[in-house]
Length: 406
Length: 96
Image 1 (cartoon, helix red, strand yellow):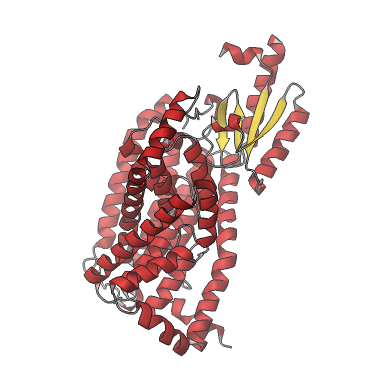
Image 2 (image 1 turned 30 degrees about the vertical axis):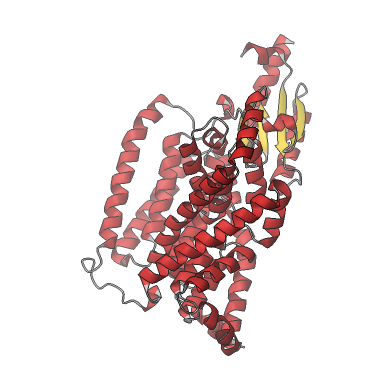
């Protein structure tokens, strides 16, 4: 059994050195968020008193603030619902939380491609907010009653105020840390020429090594590394075997898979997209495995682009076991409506994307740019990032002078 | 807050219903602090408790001092927490 042959399909995107400077910073960012970002503030924007628009927007992007996977999103959604979040924002959170995770996003960009990555990044909040708004409308009478009950209570909304003595690094340093990690992430991507990549990575790496011990206390740094490690340990021991199994099936059972899968989702039709959305919704995908599966199906031409996007949109959210848990908390009616919306919206957007996109071309099969002028992406990325960093530096200089903690 | 000076020093932890490794480690840290600081009371609530609802719990464990959130979703920074609680206990024993 030739291992290298088995995992050959992932050589271009996962099992390559190019992979590290992109994915490692993403895990580090995911590990830094619970340590340095005060997620307690989130209830202020989601809860009872928040405006409708704010709560929908915040809940669709809260996956960034609170790294979620499909396993822990249901208890958290339950928490925010009980603390006063509307039914709409709660289900928007449920949809978007696991799917807007920074590690998953980066993986899709790196492994599947930039266009799919961008579409997924836009499609998830759109589907999530739409689902939430429709749920809020359908269950409006029940929501009105709940709202009345909450306002009648003595202390209906959460008072999650941060203790002034909690200490911690300044906002400026936290932003700079995330800025540096993002820089490494963006400049580490395979599309950037090495003449630009190496100096930038070396520079930012040196800056991090110099400044991080100065800006952050040992307790926090240790906790950051621990949280990153926890993430890795949660993901890798399942992901690596899954990659191996996928490669194994591709090598030794390809004909069988071809006969079953391609007729179902090989062409970009509405039926295929909805079927793929249903599959993504029901199937339990441990983190990132849906990306590996979609990649291998796309590369081997077993699935069209539309259904593939549908799997990427619906894969990360609650699966069938998760739906049962959801029904126990929110009731079967809401769960079924939500699942129906998820499948319909995911499939529809997948289909639309598929018709616009065409056939899949693996990024590894596209020719690498020769000079920096042929592919000025490096320059654009550098320019945008530099401007952002300078702006952050200037605007937070005032904050750091006042020496306010986060 | 004058009220907090009169009350005995308390640290509260909100844990998940099925304690995760973080909750367990935080619990052990708080127990150690409780032994080291004689005036300190350590309380443990669970996410489902009505009192816990008012704190806006998103991710456990949550550590609360003086009714305000010290840390959420991570093991609390031990040195800072100990410094704060030592100061709290000292203040409580001065006023008590």
